[in-house]
Length: 436
Image 1 (cartoon, rainbow, N blue to C red):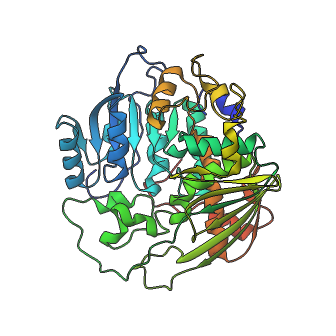
Image 2 (tube, rainbow, N blue to C red):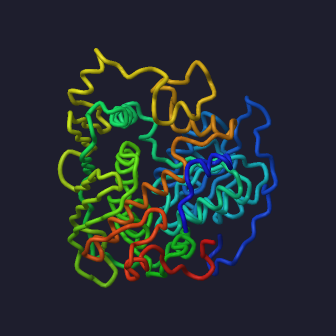
Protein backbone atom coordinates (compact mmCIF):
# COMPACT_ATOMS: atom_id res chain seq x y z
CA UNK A 1 0.00 0.00 0.00
CA UNK A 2 1.47 3.36 -0.97
CA UNK A 3 2.49 5.71 1.83
CA UNK A 4 0.26 8.73 2.37
CA UNK A 5 2.10 11.96 1.79
CA UNK A 6 2.21 14.94 4.11
CA UNK A 7 -0.01 16.81 1.66
CA UNK A 8 -2.61 14.03 1.87
CA UNK A 9 -2.77 14.44 5.63
CA UNK A 10 -2.94 18.22 5.48
CA UNK A 11 -5.99 17.93 3.22
CA UNK A 12 -7.77 16.02 5.98
CA UNK A 13 -6.70 18.36 8.76
CA UNK A 14 -4.52 15.81 10.53
CA UNK A 15 -0.78 15.89 9.98
CA UNK A 16 -11.77 -3.60 32.93
CA UNK A 17 -12.64 -6.62 34.82
CA UNK A 18 -10.69 -9.88 34.65
CA UNK A 19 -11.71 -12.15 31.84
CA UNK A 20 -12.30 -11.92 28.11
CA UNK A 21 -11.84 -8.60 26.35
CA UNK A 22 -14.95 -8.53 24.19
CA UNK A 23 -15.35 -6.68 20.88
CA UNK A 24 -16.54 -3.13 21.46
CA UNK A 25 -18.03 -0.42 19.27
CA UNK A 26 -17.46 3.23 20.12
CA UNK A 27 -20.29 5.64 19.47
CA UNK A 28 -20.05 8.32 22.13
CA UNK A 29 -18.56 11.50 20.75
CA UNK A 30 -18.01 10.12 17.24
CA UNK A 31 -20.16 12.86 15.70
CA UNK A 32 -19.15 15.56 18.17
CA UNK A 33 -17.74 18.94 17.21
CA UNK A 34 -14.50 19.14 15.23
CA UNK A 35 -13.98 22.74 16.36
CA UNK A 36 -13.48 23.93 19.94
CA UNK A 37 -16.34 25.86 21.52
CA UNK A 38 -14.22 28.99 21.82
CA UNK A 39 -10.59 30.02 21.71
CA UNK A 40 -10.55 30.26 25.51
CA UNK A 41 -11.92 26.78 26.17
CA UNK A 42 -10.11 24.57 28.64
CA UNK A 43 -9.93 20.90 27.86
CA UNK A 44 -11.72 18.15 29.68
CA UNK A 45 -8.91 15.61 29.84
CA UNK A 46 -9.11 11.82 29.97
CA UNK A 47 -5.84 10.07 30.84
CA UNK A 48 -5.02 6.42 30.13
CA UNK A 49 -1.98 4.74 31.68
CA UNK A 50 -0.86 6.58 34.79
CA UNK A 51 2.46 5.02 35.75
CA UNK A 52 5.57 7.12 35.03
CA UNK A 53 5.27 9.04 31.74
CA UNK A 54 1.48 9.00 31.71
CA UNK A 55 1.46 11.10 34.86
CA UNK A 56 4.08 13.45 33.40
CA UNK A 57 2.17 14.25 30.23
CA UNK A 58 -1.14 14.55 32.07
CA UNK A 59 0.40 17.02 34.48
CA UNK A 60 1.64 19.10 31.53
CA UNK A 61 -1.84 18.99 29.98
CA UNK A 62 -3.31 20.54 33.12
CA UNK A 63 -1.98 23.91 31.99
CA UNK A 64 -4.70 23.77 29.33
CA UNK A 65 -7.50 21.82 30.97
CA UNK A 66 -8.87 19.73 33.80
CA UNK A 67 -8.46 16.00 34.36
CA UNK A 68 -11.96 14.53 34.56
CA UNK A 69 -11.27 10.81 34.05
CA UNK A 70 -8.40 8.37 34.58
CA UNK A 71 -7.99 4.77 33.39
CA UNK A 72 -5.36 2.26 34.46
CA UNK A 73 -5.38 -1.52 34.87
CA UNK A 74 -3.57 -1.19 38.23
CA UNK A 75 -5.98 -0.06 40.97
CA UNK A 76 -3.14 1.26 43.13
CA UNK A 77 -1.83 3.37 40.25
CA UNK A 78 -5.20 4.83 39.25
CA UNK A 79 -6.15 5.66 42.84
CA UNK A 80 -2.81 7.36 43.43
CA UNK A 81 -3.22 9.27 40.18
CA UNK A 82 -6.67 10.44 41.17
CA UNK A 83 -5.25 11.74 44.44
CA UNK A 84 -2.46 13.52 42.55
CA UNK A 85 -4.94 15.27 40.26
CA UNK A 86 -7.26 16.64 42.92
CA UNK A 87 -9.30 13.60 43.96
CA UNK A 88 -12.09 14.58 41.57
CA UNK A 89 -11.52 12.55 38.37
CA UNK A 90 -13.58 9.44 37.78
CA UNK A 91 -11.39 6.34 37.66
CA UNK A 92 -11.79 3.26 35.47
CA UNK A 93 -10.00 -0.04 35.03
CA UNK A 94 -11.15 -0.35 31.40
CA UNK A 95 -10.13 2.54 29.16
CA UNK A 96 -13.14 1.96 26.90
CA UNK A 97 -15.44 3.27 29.61
CA UNK A 98 -13.40 6.46 29.74
CA UNK A 99 -13.77 6.87 25.97
CA UNK A 100 -17.53 6.44 26.31
CA UNK A 101 -17.77 9.78 28.11
CA UNK A 102 -18.96 12.48 25.74
CA UNK A 103 -17.61 15.30 27.95
CA UNK A 104 -13.94 14.42 27.26
CA UNK A 105 -12.19 16.59 24.66
CA UNK A 106 -8.68 15.15 24.62
CA UNK A 107 -7.08 11.89 25.70
CA UNK A 108 -3.56 11.40 27.04
CA UNK A 109 -2.11 7.93 26.34
CA UNK A 110 0.84 6.99 28.53
CA UNK A 111 0.56 3.20 28.44
CA UNK A 112 3.20 0.62 27.46
CA UNK A 113 4.00 0.60 23.74
CA UNK A 114 1.90 -2.42 22.77
CA UNK A 115 -1.30 -0.54 23.67
CA UNK A 116 -0.60 2.75 21.88
CA UNK A 117 -2.10 1.87 18.50
CA UNK A 118 -5.39 0.34 19.61
CA UNK A 119 -6.08 2.99 22.23
CA UNK A 120 -5.24 5.82 19.83
CA UNK A 121 -7.51 4.43 17.12
CA UNK A 122 -10.33 3.81 19.59
CA UNK A 123 -9.96 7.36 20.92
CA UNK A 124 -10.10 9.14 17.56
CA UNK A 125 -13.07 7.01 16.53
CA UNK A 126 -14.74 8.10 19.77
CA UNK A 127 -14.31 11.72 18.66
CA UNK A 128 -11.35 12.65 20.83
CA UNK A 129 -8.13 14.46 19.99
CA UNK A 130 -5.12 12.55 21.30
CA UNK A 131 -1.68 13.07 22.78
CA UNK A 132 0.09 9.70 22.61
CA UNK A 133 3.44 8.80 24.11
CA UNK A 134 6.24 7.57 21.88
CA UNK A 135 7.07 5.21 20.25
CA UNK A 136 3.89 5.46 18.21
CA UNK A 137 3.63 1.77 17.28
CA UNK A 138 4.77 -1.74 18.16
CA UNK A 139 4.99 -2.85 14.51
CA UNK A 140 5.27 -1.25 11.08
CA UNK A 141 1.78 -2.43 10.09
CA UNK A 142 0.20 -0.64 13.04
CA UNK A 143 1.27 2.71 11.63
CA UNK A 144 -0.90 2.22 8.56
CA UNK A 145 -3.95 1.56 10.74
CA UNK A 146 -3.26 4.77 12.69
CA UNK A 147 -2.79 6.95 9.61
CA UNK A 148 -6.01 5.68 8.08
CA UNK A 149 -7.99 6.21 11.30
CA UNK A 150 -6.68 9.74 11.82
CA UNK A 151 -7.33 10.61 8.18
CA UNK A 152 -10.88 9.26 8.35
CA UNK A 153 -11.81 10.94 11.65
CA UNK A 154 -9.95 14.23 11.11
CA UNK A 155 -8.81 14.23 14.73
CA UNK A 156 -5.67 16.01 15.92
CA UNK A 157 -2.95 13.67 17.22
CA UNK A 158 0.34 14.73 18.76
CA UNK A 159 3.01 12.10 19.46
CA UNK A 160 5.26 12.63 22.48
CA UNK A 161 8.53 13.08 20.58
CA UNK A 162 9.05 16.39 22.33
CA UNK A 163 12.60 16.88 21.04
CA UNK A 164 10.97 18.35 17.92
CA UNK A 165 10.03 21.45 19.88
CA UNK A 166 13.38 21.72 21.69
CA UNK A 167 15.38 24.66 20.36
CA UNK A 168 18.71 22.82 20.08
CA UNK A 169 17.37 19.82 18.18
CA UNK A 170 15.24 21.94 15.86
CA UNK A 171 18.16 24.31 15.24
CA UNK A 172 20.39 21.38 14.33
CA UNK A 173 17.87 19.99 11.86
CA UNK A 174 17.27 23.44 10.38
CA UNK A 175 20.96 24.14 9.92
CA UNK A 176 21.44 20.81 8.15
CA UNK A 177 18.48 21.51 5.88
CA UNK A 178 19.90 24.93 5.01
CA UNK A 179 23.32 23.56 4.13
CA UNK A 180 25.28 24.99 7.06
CA UNK A 181 27.45 21.84 7.13
CA UNK A 182 27.51 21.49 3.35
CA UNK A 183 26.14 18.32 1.79
CA UNK A 184 24.99 15.95 4.52
CA UNK A 185 26.92 12.68 4.39
CA UNK A 186 26.47 10.83 7.64
CA UNK A 187 24.41 10.97 10.83
CA UNK A 188 25.26 9.00 13.97
CA UNK A 189 22.60 8.43 16.63
CA UNK A 190 23.95 7.12 19.91
CA UNK A 191 21.67 5.69 22.57
CA UNK A 192 22.98 3.45 25.32
CA UNK A 193 22.87 -0.25 26.03
CA UNK A 194 19.77 -2.22 26.87
CA UNK A 195 19.57 -3.47 30.45
CA UNK A 196 19.99 -7.17 31.10
CA UNK A 197 18.13 -9.17 33.72
CA UNK A 198 16.67 -12.50 34.68
CA UNK A 199 15.66 -15.17 34.87
CA UNK A 200 12.88 -13.77 37.04
CA UNK A 201 10.39 -15.61 39.21
CA UNK A 202 6.74 -15.93 38.23
CA UNK A 203 4.21 -14.61 40.72
CA UNK A 204 0.52 -14.87 41.44
CA UNK A 205 -1.23 -11.89 39.85
CA UNK A 206 -1.95 -9.23 42.50
CA UNK A 207 -5.64 -8.59 43.12
CA UNK A 208 -5.24 -4.92 42.32
CA UNK A 209 -3.72 -5.59 38.88
CA UNK A 210 -5.58 -6.75 35.74
CA UNK A 211 -2.79 -8.71 34.08
CA UNK A 212 -5.11 -10.05 31.37
CA UNK A 213 -6.02 -6.57 30.24
CA UNK A 214 -2.46 -5.26 30.62
CA UNK A 215 -1.18 -7.88 28.15
CA UNK A 216 -3.68 -6.85 25.47
CA UNK A 217 -2.73 -8.07 21.99
CA UNK A 218 0.49 -9.75 23.18
CA UNK A 219 0.89 -13.49 23.85
CA UNK A 220 -0.52 -14.64 27.18
CA UNK A 221 2.36 -15.18 29.58
CA UNK A 222 2.75 -16.02 33.27
CA UNK A 223 2.82 -12.93 35.46
CA UNK A 224 6.34 -11.65 36.11
CA UNK A 225 6.47 -8.22 37.79
CA UNK A 226 9.44 -7.24 35.59
CA UNK A 227 7.29 -7.63 32.47
CA UNK A 228 5.07 -4.72 33.48
CA UNK A 229 5.31 -1.07 34.45
CA UNK A 230 8.61 0.61 33.54
CA UNK A 231 10.59 -2.52 32.69
CA UNK A 232 8.22 -3.63 29.93
CA UNK A 233 10.69 -1.85 27.60
CA UNK A 234 13.18 -4.70 27.78
CA UNK A 235 10.84 -7.35 26.34
CA UNK A 236 10.28 -7.59 22.58
CA UNK A 237 6.70 -8.67 23.23
CA UNK A 238 5.84 -5.17 24.40
CA UNK A 239 8.48 -2.83 23.01
CA UNK A 240 11.73 -2.63 21.05
CA UNK A 241 14.33 -1.85 23.69
CA UNK A 242 16.51 1.23 23.41
CA UNK A 243 16.16 1.12 19.62
CA UNK A 244 12.55 2.30 19.88
CA UNK A 245 12.76 3.91 23.34
CA UNK A 246 15.56 6.37 22.50
CA UNK A 247 15.46 5.82 18.75
CA UNK A 248 11.97 7.26 18.61
CA UNK A 249 13.57 10.54 19.74
CA UNK A 250 17.00 10.62 18.10
CA UNK A 251 16.21 8.83 14.84
CA UNK A 252 13.19 11.09 14.47
CA UNK A 253 15.38 14.21 14.62
CA UNK A 254 17.95 12.62 12.31
CA UNK A 255 15.32 11.71 9.76
CA UNK A 256 13.75 15.19 10.02
CA UNK A 257 17.09 16.65 8.98
CA UNK A 258 17.88 13.97 6.38
CA UNK A 259 14.59 14.61 4.57
CA UNK A 260 14.42 11.14 3.06
CA UNK A 261 13.39 7.57 3.89
CA UNK A 262 15.54 4.43 4.33
CA UNK A 263 16.15 1.91 1.57
CA UNK A 264 18.82 -0.37 3.06
CA UNK A 265 19.24 -1.59 6.63
CA UNK A 266 22.05 -3.63 8.11
CA UNK A 267 21.51 -4.46 11.78
CA UNK A 268 23.88 -6.30 14.08
CA UNK A 269 23.07 -7.51 17.56
CA UNK A 270 24.01 -9.84 20.34
CA UNK A 271 20.82 -11.48 21.50
CA UNK A 272 20.45 -13.05 24.96
CA UNK A 273 20.26 -16.80 25.31
CA UNK A 274 16.81 -18.36 25.59
CA UNK A 275 16.00 -18.66 29.27
CA UNK A 276 12.47 -19.96 29.01
CA UNK A 277 10.77 -16.60 28.61
CA UNK A 278 11.69 -15.38 32.09
CA UNK A 279 14.46 -12.89 31.20
CA UNK A 280 14.75 -9.62 29.32
CA UNK A 281 15.04 -10.55 25.65
CA UNK A 282 16.05 -7.35 23.85
CA UNK A 283 19.57 -7.21 22.38
CA UNK A 284 22.43 -6.99 24.84
CA UNK A 285 24.45 -5.11 22.25
CA UNK A 286 23.30 -3.59 18.96
CA UNK A 287 24.20 -1.40 16.00
CA UNK A 288 22.62 -0.54 12.66
CA UNK A 289 23.83 1.01 9.40
CA UNK A 290 20.97 2.55 7.41
CA UNK A 291 21.19 4.07 3.93
CA UNK A 292 18.60 6.57 2.72
CA UNK A 293 17.22 7.15 -0.75
CA UNK A 294 19.20 10.40 -1.02
CA UNK A 295 22.47 8.61 -0.19
CA UNK A 296 22.84 9.76 3.43
CA UNK A 297 24.06 7.12 5.88
CA UNK A 298 22.60 6.80 9.39
CA UNK A 299 24.59 4.90 12.00
CA UNK A 300 22.88 3.77 15.20
CA UNK A 301 25.16 2.84 18.07
CA UNK A 302 24.66 1.79 21.69
CA UNK A 303 28.04 3.07 22.94
CA UNK A 304 29.47 6.56 23.06
CA UNK A 305 28.18 10.01 23.91
CA UNK A 306 24.40 9.90 23.72
CA UNK A 307 23.08 12.29 21.10
CA UNK A 308 23.16 12.99 17.36
CA UNK A 309 26.18 13.86 15.20
CA UNK A 310 25.53 15.38 11.77
CA UNK A 311 28.50 15.28 9.40
CA UNK A 312 28.65 17.11 6.09
CA UNK A 313 31.37 17.88 3.59
CA UNK A 314 31.77 21.36 5.14
CA UNK A 315 31.39 20.78 8.86
CA UNK A 316 29.60 18.90 11.58
CA UNK A 317 27.14 19.52 14.40
CA UNK A 318 26.56 17.55 17.59
CA UNK A 319 23.31 17.90 19.55
CA UNK A 320 21.83 16.25 22.61
CA UNK A 321 19.72 17.26 25.57
CA UNK A 322 22.66 19.19 26.96
CA UNK A 323 22.83 21.54 23.98
CA UNK A 324 24.25 21.99 20.50
CA UNK A 325 27.85 22.61 19.43
CA UNK A 326 30.17 22.69 16.45
CA UNK A 327 31.86 25.41 14.41
CA UNK A 328 28.77 25.97 12.21
CA UNK A 329 26.87 26.76 15.42
CA UNK A 330 29.56 29.22 16.51
CA UNK A 331 29.35 30.86 13.07
CA UNK A 332 25.68 31.72 13.66
CA UNK A 333 26.83 34.78 15.63
CA UNK A 334 28.11 36.31 12.38
CA UNK A 335 25.80 34.58 9.93
CA UNK A 336 22.42 33.88 11.56
CA UNK A 337 19.75 31.85 9.86
CA UNK A 338 17.51 34.13 7.79
CA UNK A 339 14.21 34.90 9.50
CA UNK A 340 11.11 33.75 7.68
CA UNK A 341 12.98 31.21 5.57
CA UNK A 342 12.87 28.12 7.75
CA UNK A 343 12.33 24.89 5.91
CA UNK A 344 10.76 22.96 8.77
CA UNK A 345 7.51 23.29 10.65
CA UNK A 346 6.86 26.96 11.37
CA UNK A 347 6.13 28.51 7.99
CA UNK A 348 3.57 25.85 7.11
CA UNK A 349 1.64 25.71 10.33
CA UNK A 350 1.72 28.81 12.51
CA UNK A 351 -1.16 31.24 11.98
CA UNK A 352 0.14 33.96 14.29
CA UNK A 353 2.03 36.57 12.22
CA UNK A 354 4.12 37.69 15.20
CA UNK A 355 5.44 34.12 15.66
CA UNK A 356 5.86 33.04 12.06
CA UNK A 357 9.44 32.55 10.92
CA UNK A 358 10.86 32.25 14.43
CA UNK A 359 12.67 29.07 15.33
CA UNK A 360 11.56 29.39 18.97
CA UNK A 361 7.90 29.92 18.01
CA UNK A 362 6.67 26.70 19.64
CA UNK A 363 6.72 27.26 23.38
CA UNK A 364 6.34 23.60 24.28
CA UNK A 365 5.08 20.30 22.91
CA UNK A 366 1.81 20.27 24.80
CA UNK A 367 1.21 23.91 23.90
CA UNK A 368 1.60 23.05 20.22
CA UNK A 369 -0.97 20.28 20.66
CA UNK A 370 -3.35 22.73 22.34
CA UNK A 371 -2.91 25.27 19.54
CA UNK A 372 -3.58 22.62 16.91
CA UNK A 373 -6.68 21.33 18.69
CA UNK A 374 -8.13 24.83 18.30
CA UNK A 375 -6.84 25.60 14.80
CA UNK A 376 -7.21 22.00 13.48
CA UNK A 377 -3.70 22.34 12.03
CA UNK A 378 -1.19 19.50 11.92
CA UNK A 379 0.96 19.16 15.07
CA UNK A 380 4.72 19.16 14.88
CA UNK A 381 4.90 15.44 15.78
CA UNK A 382 2.09 14.25 13.52
CA UNK A 383 1.27 10.61 12.92
CA UNK A 384 2.81 10.42 9.44
CA UNK A 385 6.23 11.69 10.51
CA UNK A 386 6.21 9.53 13.62
CA UNK A 387 5.09 6.43 11.74
CA UNK A 388 8.01 6.96 9.38
CA UNK A 389 10.49 7.54 12.21
CA UNK A 390 9.52 4.55 14.32
CA UNK A 391 9.32 2.40 11.19
CA UNK A 392 13.06 2.96 10.78
CA UNK A 393 13.54 1.77 14.37
CA UNK A 394 11.43 -1.33 13.69
CA UNK A 395 13.36 -2.09 10.49
CA UNK A 396 16.64 -1.97 12.39
CA UNK A 397 15.29 -4.35 15.03
CA UNK A 398 14.01 -6.74 12.35
CA UNK A 399 17.39 -6.78 10.59
CA UNK A 400 19.12 -7.43 13.91
CA UNK A 401 16.85 -10.31 14.80
CA UNK A 402 17.09 -11.87 11.34
CA UNK A 403 20.84 -11.38 11.35
CA UNK A 404 21.11 -10.10 7.78
CA UNK A 405 20.87 -6.91 5.67
CA UNK A 406 17.49 -5.92 4.23
CA UNK A 407 16.29 -3.77 1.33
CA UNK A 408 13.25 -1.59 2.05
CA UNK A 409 10.71 -0.07 -0.32
CA UNK A 410 9.40 3.02 1.54
CA UNK A 411 6.57 3.62 -0.91
CA UNK A 412 5.14 0.11 -0.72
CA UNK A 413 6.20 -0.23 2.94
CA UNK A 414 7.60 -3.71 2.45
CA UNK A 415 10.93 -5.44 1.98
CA UNK A 416 11.92 -5.97 -1.65
CA UNK A 417 11.58 -9.60 -2.66
CA UNK A 418 11.85 -10.88 0.91
CA UNK A 419 8.72 -12.74 1.96
CA UNK A 420 10.32 -13.96 5.18
CA UNK A 421 11.26 -10.47 6.35
CA UNK A 422 7.81 -9.16 5.43
CA UNK A 423 6.23 -11.52 7.96
CA UNK A 424 7.96 -9.45 10.66
CA UNK A 425 6.08 -6.26 9.74
CA UNK A 426 3.08 -7.31 11.83
CA UNK A 427 2.41 -9.69 14.69
CA UNK A 428 -0.30 -12.14 15.59
CA UNK A 429 -2.76 -10.56 18.01
CA UNK A 430 -4.75 -12.28 20.73
CA UNK A 431 -8.44 -12.68 20.06
CA UNK A 432 -10.47 -9.77 21.36
CA UNK A 433 -7.58 -7.32 21.17
CA UNK A 434 -7.14 -7.07 17.42
CA UNK A 435 -6.26 -3.73 15.85
CA UNK A 436 -8.48 -2.92 12.88
